[in-house]
Length: 70
Image (cartoon, rainbow, N blue to C red; front, side, top):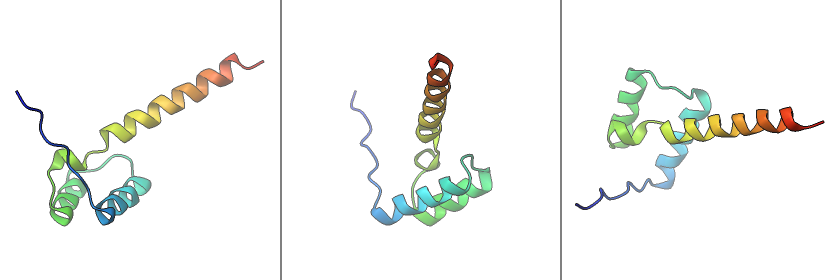
């Protein structure tokens, strides 16, 4: 079974997604629908799951470092 091909975003699409993520990390369904229409991609491609997970991991690592520091 072949894997689905990775979605490649144009620089403008990346800029728009980064701009929206900087404003709000969690999208309301209507915001997600608007981005889907604007960028012409699927809703799955618009979700910020990986970025949210990365930030949670970084925050946890930061807390762990502060706990172990003298």
